[in-house]
Length: 165
Image (cartoon, rainbow, N blue to C red; front, side):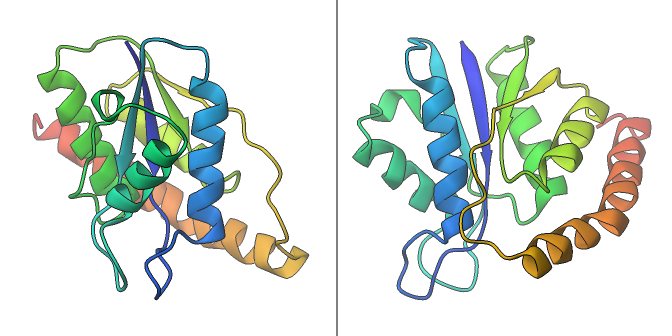
């Protein structure tokens, strides 16, 4: 089994995937194509609009031809930290001890990999495609937003591990 965790992003007011969400799923699809044992783990709870992020991603995966049996939705993750813990619990419950692959945006990938690894999950990156029509100011906004989130979330994961969770 090759688990591919797809981290959530916003769902638009009309219920469609945001460009970031769409690109994350597309990256996971490119990576999983040709892998008969690919298991897609879209994670993300219901946000402000539409269905849960994981449900929107699962629909996109099914529309691309991925069988429902190769998709395991994780609908409780409200942020990166909770998504990491929820996916770790799912994988442990399935007895999976091998590596997982993280599909997310370029700016978000370092945090996802770090948190998964700190949580005891052997994590690797899914190759990321182009970032689309995102301007320089928007790219820097997201990068700067990650700066305080990385040490904060890392401390939370380490705290959870220290508590035996």
